[in-house]
Amino acid sequence: MNIGDRVRLVHGKEEGIIFAFLPGNIVEIEIEDGFRIPVLQKEIVTIAAEEKQRMAKTSQGIQPRKETEHVFKPSAPFAAKGIYLAFVAVNDRALTVHIINNSDWTVPFTASTHDGSLHKGIGAGALPARSSQKLTEVQLKDFESWPVFDFQLLFFREGNYELPLPIHKKMKCRAQSFYNSKQKAPVIQKDAYVFQLDLENLKQPETVVEVGLSDRLRERMMDGAAIESEKSPLEQPDDIVDLHIEKLNTASENLKKEQILAMQLKAFDTYLERAIAGGMEHITFIHGVGSGALRDELHRRLSKNKDIQYFKDAQKEKFGYGATLVYLK
Image (cartoon, rainbow, N blue to C red; front, side, top):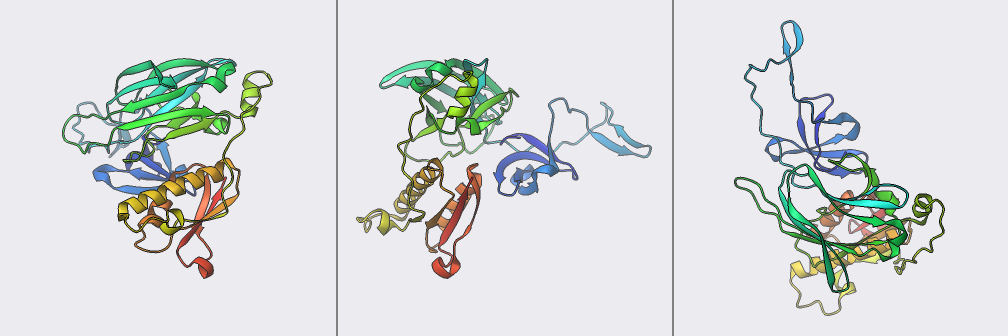
């Protein structure tokens, strides 16, 4: 199952769209009228494309509805997220690269690669809802020299809607934990290494997302060929990180509230990434109590991060409710 998939409850009548995956095998489902409900993952099933006929109770038992019957169908919830990049193994030497739209948007896009200042176009167009497009093919033996993948995404649908921000995402593959992303790719339904391009769609400075291919995976796919792995330059942070603005920036007296929050979130993302890459077991973030805006946003991001085992309020006798302890996978 993936964000954007249509599902129905096993023991209920509700249908909806997968909006988010929460800790404890909980899935947040958006049903009609925009309401979201949390359910256990085992209590939902994906609606197959061929599942066209509804079943209805009659006086003689459960019978398929006749085509001539008038059936009122409520408007289905709109799947607003679900744009992916997928690497599909062709053989033990090559991978094909696909862009996948598992949302209900039509997505005009451009895709390119670049090394330095030279860009090379690998795909463009308007990707319809629930569709995919093959972009290029890459060789495993050239993994260390794969270029940066660059995507620009827009969003369109008929009628009135709230327009999301355009997305400009860059991704550079590194020799880290690429194999952890293996799953069944949505739409194309093939085993692939999958990365979501629209996981966050906020107005933030452009960042480069780094994903990696593990030595173990490369050796297996290259029939044990020895490839020297690239060492990660990231160092482990302290196991307690204070996000108070005076700890991050000494010249903070003239900053606006939104600027302070943006700096704190940027620091949080950086330290969390370093903790994950460094193999830390846990890390504590001191965010204070205040209005609760920083704490709520940290918890929202943590609940969507697949590298997080769980998180909780840290040592109340030491931090009160002003810190969060995060356990990493």
